[in-house]
Length: 107
Image 1: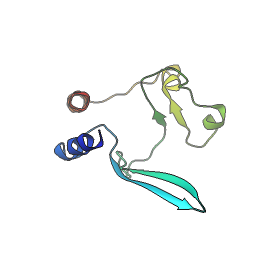
Image 2: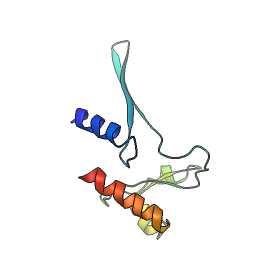
Image 3: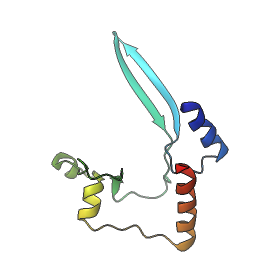
Image 4: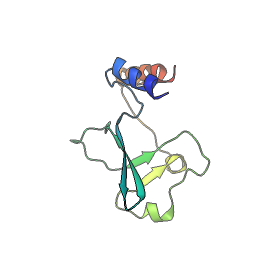
């Protein structure tokens, strides 16, 4: 539930791989509701983004559309990651920290 999620984010001081929701809003204009979700960016704004993926750990309908792929910085998906034989390289210490966060997040 949302209360447990919030307590967890506070307890780990934001040191998590889970998305951090900062606000959820509903805006009503002319009897039409729009919903907005504000999330914290987990990446440094100082580093340029040369490729981005929306990975969910599933292969079902997980390939970017042709329309998406022609964008200057497309959001690619799980099948695109596999088809391009992509790998993530991190040092041993970063790997340890990453796996600790992942384990803690899924408990």
